[in-house]
Length: 119
Image 1: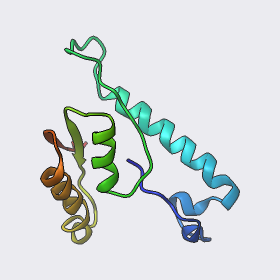
Image 2 (image 1 turned 90 degrees about the horizontal axis):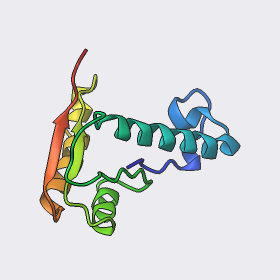
Image 3 (image 1 turned 135 degrees about the vertical axis):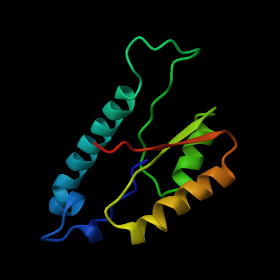
């Protein structure tokens, strides 16, 4: 799930979507979506024998509601969420865990959280 970026966030000297002009924001979003989808597919090792083929989906919506809505629309049997480490523990103590907590509490299917591996 990619959180929406408002055009109000487009400002000089910023990073991410804000570094693009208003006209380039759509191209940036398309590239981000394609890269995210590729990364999802790459998480499944080649030759893995699964009972059914996983459906990978990249959508844009607010978190965590968008995750729960996408799971309902796709009739998901499992939600997998990453729990990434951050360089900002103060932020990590509130925002990512609030999303995880909300999804775990409200999901109508199992939720698997996966911690990122540090290199």
